[in-house]
Amino acid sequence: MTGLFDPFTIKSITLRNRIGMSPMCQYSYQDGFSNDWQLMHLGARAVGGAGLVIAEATAIDPAGRITPYDVGIWDERHIEPLRRVTNIIQSQGAVPGIQIAHAGRKACVGKPWGEERGRPITNSDSRWWKVVGPSAIAYTPDHQVPHELTVADIHGLQRAFMIAARRAYEAGFEWLEIHAAHGYLIHEFYSPYSNQRTDEYGGSFENRVRFLLETVDKVQSVWPEELSLTVRVSGTDWVEDGWLVEDSVALAKLLKKSGVDLIDCSSGGNVADVSLPFGPGYQVPISETIRKEAKIATSTVGLIKTPQQADSIIREERADLVLLGREFLRDAYWPLHAAKELGVDMDVPPQYMKAY
Image (cartoon, rainbow, N blue to C red):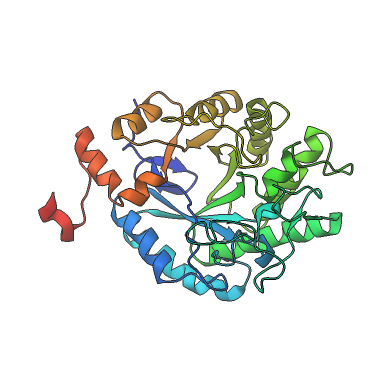
């Protein structure tokens, strides 16, 4: 029976275990350039034993940043600083991944801490920019009403995703995730809650998922076939008139046909103030359903805390990978501690052996 510390292979990429670090924004950069904070932050989790380390949402376009302080990949000059990150992750035995993203109508907000507390930036602020979306519908009354993208705009952004994927490969990433979750641009297109278009990118399910499927095709034209290509989706909007788990299953089947290797299953983010059923592993049923019904590999996230819980998810075939977020913020060495607790032998960096 496969467990948490068994390897996982997609095409030419093999993870040493089934523990990954979920992409988590750090809001610590200037002009999109990776820096020592990202190098230290991601490198520490590779040293700590993660099989996969995914760099946070990395903007394909300046207007696609969540905050002015996001890391980016819209400029050729962003490649070299990111290569430092992939080098350190690989040197410590982990696979370097990256999530490429556009924040859509949820862009142009402040840092989530301090005085700004993630509030929308006003147009009197020099940091302000105009946000975009599938329809002219604001995320909340305090957020901007986005510019409704034209078909030409859409094709331009799909090309930006493609170029970002090429840059990610040149920077040394081996695992590419397209961010199509959490109420950001691609999620805004496929959810009927935020997409009220009447053209070929709105209305029916087939039209609403078109943006994502065409983006996948563009990305595949530059991303090597032997490397891992994944998509993060919000499995449900958690509202009856929004995106539902059965929609995610249908989408996952189409993504599989398009050559996507794995669906990273999260949820929510597109409907403000919605009530989510928070609890240990509350999103695991989404992963399990998509995995079984679409017959595609999945990863799962969300309040997964203990080694036993993570191991059981893998052993019960509810997901192929477990991605940790907050647990990795609390403990960069979670995999090493989990291996000891589960009685699994795992290589410890020799510099740290005296602690084990």
